[in-house]
Length: 281
Length: 173
Image (spheres, rainbow over the protein chains, first blue to last red):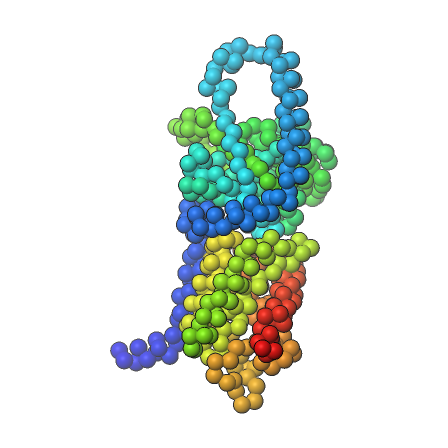
């Protein structure tokens, strides 16, 4: 017994080293599981508060840019509203009276207080939390396109898994032809992403728009993901190798919108009871 | 360790971490080079600090930075690793006659050449552990390696500048 203690004492440094490294590894794995709600991230009150303070200082330097994008968006919304008014005559009246369907999606605006784009796993922190009605798994977009998905929520803050995260996949569609595919980031360039699983019988072209498919209950249909910039087809591969330019400007995010799907529970429970599994996340 | 050095170390710990998470978190050069100056705190703990304490300090500093970077465990693992090898490496670099007790392995101690010899391998080791853990494997080896080398250079320059600015002034006083 004494020799055992002597042995342990002799190698104490190495044993502590092993213990701490295993602890770190456990934390990494724990944090990587997609939905693991943990205390140690920037949604906790102290860290979020500090980031908000430093963010509110640097905000002043971006005011002009933010104003410009807001004005642009206003103009775009006005145009769309007038288009809607024009086309309202041809609308399906049964759909028009179904208020639950009309209010299917709710939008919540939030300010970005922390953002990264250059690591292999990028996260965004926003200044809205559970007290504003934010829940894990809600979709996040900005004026131009898909941004990510909510990971962890605290009372005042929330952490978003950015689309620039090597484990995130977005179910997408080629807008022109309607073929399904999957968008995934390859971890290199913060402006570009890869399209996977687009079968070789389809003929995509440079400049085609990729949009969300709406096949999982997270993202609504037809939100832009990106525009095809490069197409490769290997001799004996089943899928195209496609690079897109992301629609959202991930480097200059200042305000984002969170989408609340009011019919999500109905869609999910129906799909589960029908035995359908959402493979294409 | 007397009270003065403990207070000095606590002060420098807070300063290093704050500078890291408030300013340098947003600094990236050429999309590749990151600066992790906070490991300076770990590298400049007094020479005779024992290894278990060093590793616990490394773990705490890494964990704190991780919380701000939303990368739980990655910085902590890299810091524990360099704290494990730090004293072994220092023993190899011991000048003739050994270190005086309580001395800090800084630029002032033995001049620039010795300092760079001491710091560089530990920085490279830290950054390699960090970026490969972040990429979770060795795919994209070349890309990750350029990140490691460019970031190491950036961190080295930042640490040397910090040394010249803050650790050498007491000589003049």
